[in-house]
Length: 78
Image 1 (spheres, rainbow, N blue to C red):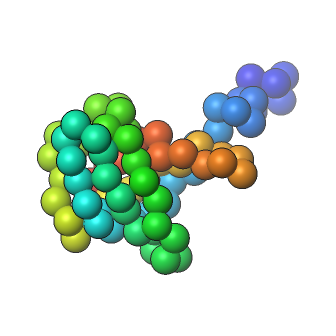
Image 2 (image 1 turned 135 degrees about the horizontal axis):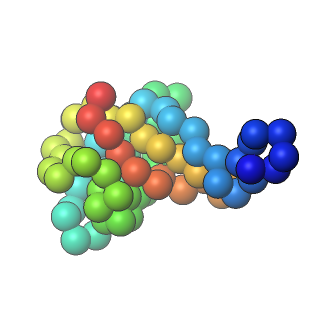
């Protein structure tokens, strides 16, 4: 925390909704955010989640790191 009860910016996470476009258990895959932006995610994002299997078309909640180079940190079932 920064003394005001907030975490440093590098630790902040945003959650958005998306649809799985592709999934590979070893490599990760691609998802489409509700605003139409396509993002890749690493297999680590699935490992960091309670999710164990994904399928194309599945709705998920995506935890993104904040900042200009946002990365998918974890996925949750929608």
